[in-house]
Amino acid sequence: MSNTAKLTLEGKEYELPVVVGSENEKAIDITRLRAQTGYITLDTGYMNTGATRSAITYLDGEQGILRYRGIPIEDLAEKSTFVETSYLLLHGELPTQEQWKRFSNLLTYHSMIHEDMIRFFDGYPATAHPMAILSSMVCSLSAYYPESLNVFENMDMQSTRLLSKLRTIAAFSYKKSVGQPMMYPQNHLSYCANFLHMMFATPAERYEPDPDMVRALNILLILHADHEQNCSTSTVRLVGSSQANLFASVSAGICALWGPLHGGANQAVIEMLEEMQQTKLSCKEFVSQVKDKKAKVRLMGFGHRVYKNYDPRAKILKQMAQVILNKKGVNDPMLQLAQELEEAALSDPFFIERKLYPNVDFYSGLLYKAMGIPVNMFTVMFAIGRLPGWIAQCKEMMEDPENKIGRPRQIYTGPTERHYTALADRK
Ligand code: SDX
Image (cartoon, rainbow, N blue to C red; front, side, top):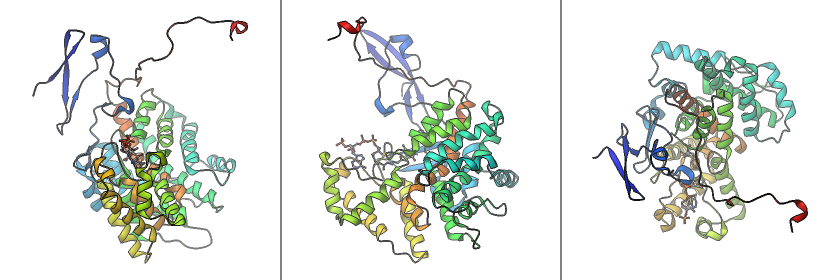
């Protein structure tokens, strides 16, 4: 295979280098295209554009493969914990006993937020969406750790603080929304058990996190931990490329994730299923609506920019949902409805032709619901899971000596030169 691509423009021939990755992915390197030819490329939504080289996550959309640092997510979901997987994403290797103990202790001892930050919650209405609180509280962490303003300084410390405190901020935003006192983290609890404690314990009664729920939460967070250059991760990288501090970059990523086309889809899936139940719309009728472009209805939790096969995360979550609901003795009609809807869609040419399959968001909400987590916290759960990925990607970018501030070009389509006219002369 030639290691260059030939391009002919206005009668001149150019050769562009070809880049091949460790999984044999191929790219044409256009770094010098404009300097050589005066042309740029145009690629709305970056459908065909690679923004970076990266050694963190590999996914194959056709084969439905997802690996973190080379390890399949099926292995990690079955054998690892979210803390261990976070270490793997951040440092490139699974931790030794010693490294794991140190990392786990740091996460335990940095779980509190400054008492002054608790007062921020007084300013929010109880109806505030927790993603609004999360993004502003995360950015405000930079006010309490001024040393973080130099993003190159103690990145590991900032990362650990953020990994530990995001959980606390999330749980506190939930307690604010239900008018209950905030429950402080307990150092004897593991990462996920501590989060469930902060969410569901009250001063009135003892709360012991259910080990099955702790395990399910570990798996949910592992499955969300990274996903190469998706919308929110690309946002974190772009903001970080200006050397903004880690808290500011992640805060921007939280805002990008909030959109219903991205991480907001898990909330939108449950709202879609609830509406179907309330309106008694059958799966067949709903699928017909989705196929009617004029209806402008999407089957939320279906489709993916990269996966043109079943999202491997959705496969694991679908099995888990059944197991967890059985264990809780819950027969949630919504799970049955979701399974029927999946069947109806996967057997319909409209979805088959467009290679639309369930993605990570289709079943995750049913699991969060079974754990007692309210719908408006679902995207917050996605953010807690994705945080190690955002940090690892930002860290990889900061450590790349060739990294430059992100600044895409454009093709201008507005008016050509014209002159100012006085107000009195404008008709
Ligand atoms: C996440 O990038 C990542 O890695 C994201 C993520 C991660 O881990 O970070 O995996 C997490 O964001 C998962 C996606 C969650 N979003 C949803 O479930 C929202 C519903 N899905 C879609 O809106 C859509 O599928 C996207 C946004 C996910 C992908 O959109 P694309 O790649 O831009 O595809 P498109 O909108 O151009 O659709 C192509 C065709 C269109 O039909 P035609 O115009 O060709 O006739 O497929 C149709 C679309 O109308 N289509 C859908 C559909 N998704 C695509 N039709 C109905 N329902 C859908 N869900």
